[in-house]
Length: 451
Ligand code: DMJ
Image (cartoon, rainbow, N blue to C red; front, side, top):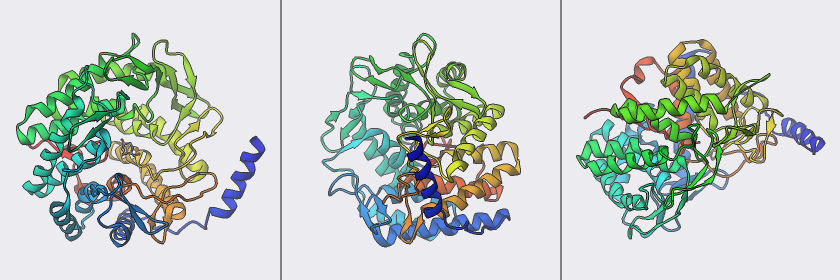
């Protein structure tokens, strides 16, 4: 097994790693290069997938999340990035086609969480930037159609809801999908005056927090009708991650003191039980939520969001050390896997890189907080490796394996919404965005406290 892994590693390096692309070292030239790559990827979507949810950059075609019913996921998710990176005309054209053709009156079962963070978040931030009431109208219509998801016995949302009929499905959910709704639903409530949005999403968050274990941790899956945990694995990775992010950010955006209290208690438990010091640095692994006993030394691309949240909480020391570990994981292969065993220092079963933003997002927050040039240099490494391994003639694509660099056929909408936005912000002039004035939702949509 070990031999196999080593030879695959060598083959991958020899076959797939082209000579590094020369990049400028000057900060403003790097910002320009990110803009150029963004425009390249956006134009690829426009050329081959316009009117569909996402681009398939190897087959040069479009893909819809729900057969026969596009929700224009990429354009909605990209709108505020287009504006932030200075592509005003492209943004206005995208807005016009969204307003002309996006309809939520569809007999399709959507994932409440994904639609909330990408579409509701995208529409709300674009509305705040463009002041076009049609965008708020779409957001309000979407919000109404998602509300039935909260009608479980506990008030924690079902995973799926039909946009036309309100029929729900998916009684087993997880902290991320239950607890990553308040920034979007809360903003919608403030902008429309409909308190029900805030109340439903906040209740879901509180119900979840109230089911934490005696030592203050949450598990990985929970039944939203009975309130019973169905997996007691506790970590900061996929399925849990942004629950923690929203406890802190809901306080920052709305001044909600309950959320602040829940965050404080949670981060204390997370730092106490999940943090793991090894020779290779600081990591956050997996433990049993009841006992705190370590059950796995697993980290990965999604966990790399945590330094950003720690910076927002004022804990730059811990953030800096965890980002160093994430960067070590990245530089082993020139991209990061979804699953990484930090004890063995090698990828787990999910060894692909899905064009994820989290490690770049954390570098951006750390650069903003410390001003240290090492984070600019990290950004330069991310850009170089993205171009080397994920750029194709038809856009940017995911890697099936960071070891072999085999490419998949997918450009997730968050690549334009998040990955390139945070990369641009690392290099962009400071006046591009004042972090004190916005709170980014988990899909990097900047929300402003305009109420
Ligand atoms: C995005 O949709 C969001 O950042 C979410 O919180 C996690 N997954 C992807 C990016 O990795």
